[in-house]
Length: 189
Image (cartoon, rainbow, N blue to C red):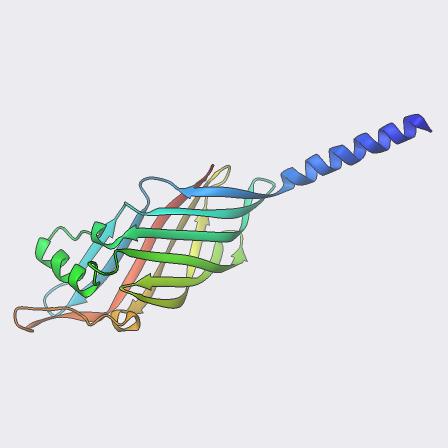
């Protein structure tokens, strides 16, 4: 009887340890080199701005070493780290983004649905003082502590209460439609 209780106790401990490794909540941070980009057009030419200065953290659900979901994720960057390579375009963009008053652009995940390598992210995106709910497709790759996410969102400047900038006394007009895209890597702490 005593031997039976020892075996049962050891089995219970083994099952608890093994089950803990199968499904775990893992804290993650954004890796250096991740890129976020804004692309748009105007009556003169297409343009883009990018930053690799974002910060992010979250909690991912990992099962058997594979990504299964995220219970939290926050990604943000200082708006003035967006650069186009043209100082005049940057200056007009910062004015439209009201960067003196609203320093950061921030995304907070509310839900993530899907499986395998295809997910849909839903969350709150804050730009220029306006916070809006957005949803967009996300592709996942990577395992073993490094998870790569790629996706994009087509939206409008006016959705965030931003008046599309103009230049040269209104003769050059920025299109309202923009595409926000990202290539990010999160790694386990």
